[in-house]
Length: 90
Image (cartoon, rainbow, N blue to C red; front, side):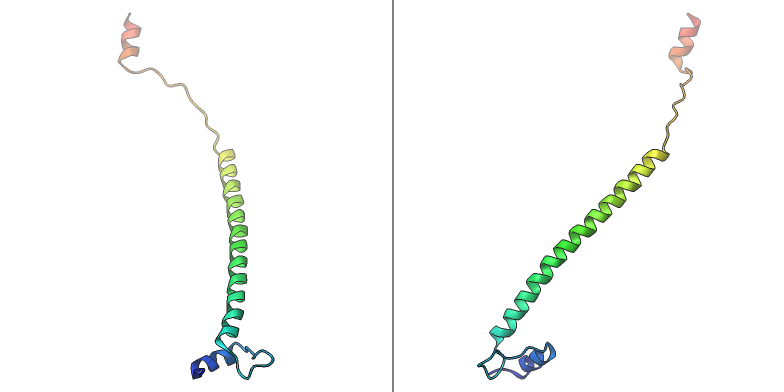
């Protein structure tokens, strides 16, 4: 016996009964669903890898540009501490 909800589900997803069967069995529906979900998961992983690579490239480019902008100029510090004062007196 197949429930009314299950029949509604098969109609919604347009799942047809296999040849030789009167109605769609749960096994038929869930085999199709399993194939779909497995393929979807694989594509999801591939797409996430592509997005991750794009973000990594963008971050590296941003870091490279920030590194080029930051030009440090080090000024020699004038000695103004106790050692410098004592050194000047001696």
